[in-house]
Amino acid sequence: MADNCICGEDVKALGTPNCIPNFGVGAKLLLAQLVNSENVRQNIDITAIDATYFTDRVNDPEYKDRIHPTPVMENYTYDPAEDEVQTTTGGTTFTLRDGRVTITGQFMNMNPTFYGQLKSIKCPKMGFMIVDRGGNLIGDSSEAFDNDILKFVPIQKGSVQVRFFAATDATVPYVMISFQIDSTFDIANLGMIEASDIPESLLDLEDAIPAVGVASDISTTGATVAIGYLYGTGNTREPLTDAVSGDFVLKEISPTPSTITITSSVETPDGTYEFVFPTQTSGDVLELTLNKDGFALEPVRILIP
Image (cartoon, rainbow, N blue to C red; front, side):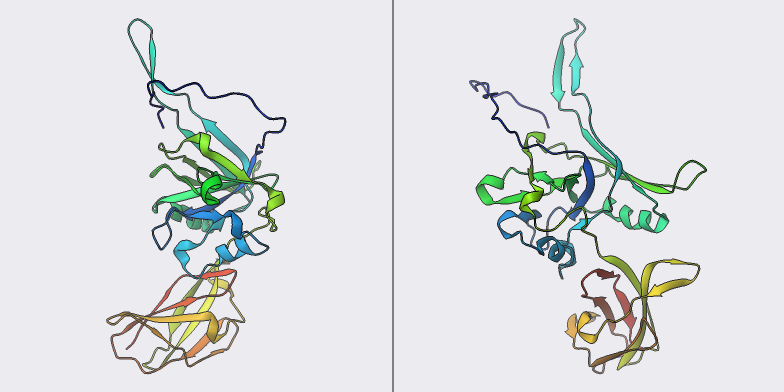
């Protein structure tokens, strides 16, 4: 962002205390949609942090409100460009706006599936925080002292780049991400929560594992859904096992949106669930999701014959 001069404003004090809180090299990102389901800027409630706070945020039942920790990054860079200036014919320069900050990192030993998942952040308006190598959490501290929150820093819309690099004789396969901090954000507002104030290890925090499902044997009173992890080889995926009826949410999407109570579910064989539900009408469109910590099932559509 550009700094507009205010007439009569004094120079700020430049003294420093004996110890200045500072953060280290970035180790991983926390990503989130910039505003939540209630249209409020995503943030971390500093007063609410306990031993499960961040794990609970990863598994929030409202998917838009979730935070998404990435794997640990390598070759992290924080690159502030030079300010954009105008230079007159006489050689005088005038600062037009602050230089953009570009953040880059690499996720090693990753495959195209991870690339596809990470690429999903390119379209929504996103925010991020940085976890440094010491486990400190860095974000927008503009309301930390007044409202006890650390906000997600906005990512410049359209700046996200995600690239997959295949293995070579000299390198492992990896996925690279780069993006710019939003031009309206004042870097002076970056602040942190120290690792000593966070009972969980953010360096060990993992996102939910993605899963997909395929519906078959659909009738007006039931359906069979085979569920497996998104990552797989050939035409096989490791089955997602040990889910129970209470872990699933079934809704009618069309024509009358509503929640449907699942009567029962039986897993046989592993990862294949036979559902029984109240009688539906031909043409109804249902959607099955999973509310089980540690997993994220892409919604499975069920069209009633």
